[in-house]
Image 1 (cartoon, helix red, strand yellow):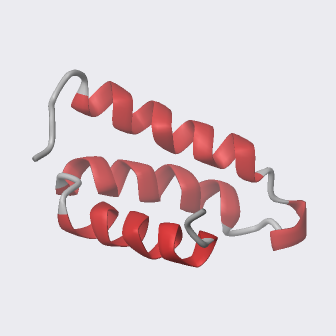
Image 2 (cartoon, helix red, strand yellow):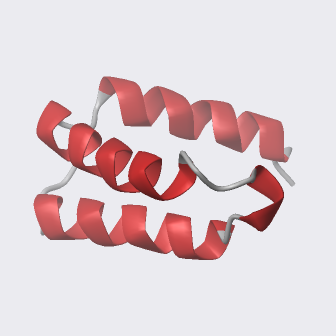
Length: 66
């Protein structure tokens, strides 16, 4: 099993290196507007991840990464 910290670091690397800027900015904007005034323990992580995945899927469609 891959440790969660390793998965998080890989995901962060991919997010900043391979995701197109306009997609990254849209994801960050959506998440920041929801997180900025909410205490961390009150955040719904599943909902935040769902929003981010929805934006990424919508923006990238069927594009593939190598």
